[in-house]
Length: 235
Image (cartoon, rainbow, N blue to C red):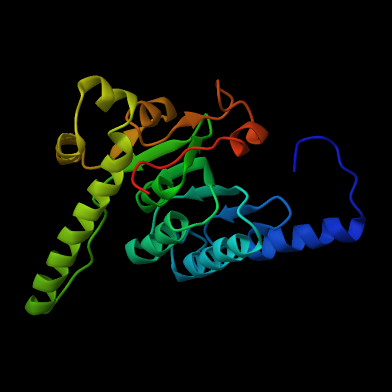
């Protein structure tokens, strides 16, 4: 669906609006809207959770069942649950359709991992980008604590491998001729120093966490990014 003016019947418009606002999907244009739910009890952003994950996976699988045209994901999240986020990551990684993510407002924590599974990773000009180790909850029983620490360590290594698989081809690491192992070491050192590593859009692109910024050359508008075809090096 291009940007040209198209007059649609009012019933079609209502149906599309219903699907967008209730199911986070525009079937006609193959767009999925990925954000927190609005019914949080304390009115704060809930982030990645079971609701966001289950609906998103259904939407991805549904669009793949129709055809293999590009899927555009509109992403806005401050992070959230690791395991539900990885379910979303895997659904995009295994998608039979090309995938493009367009990031709004902020992509932090788990949101920065989910977007790495997309073929094309585009940022809005004014987003905030942040990666970190994440947070751990309290554990009262020692055996449970030992087990969960091992799990956290495995998750951390998965996270660094995901980042490095894309970042190694970014401008910064390519210029230094870093391989994947060296890229992981560099990211670990930055997180050790900063704790939370905040980046503006251009820094995120230069380090290889994203491919471009909407409005710039090669990513002029949404219609243009729909046409980008790029194979992930790790797929």
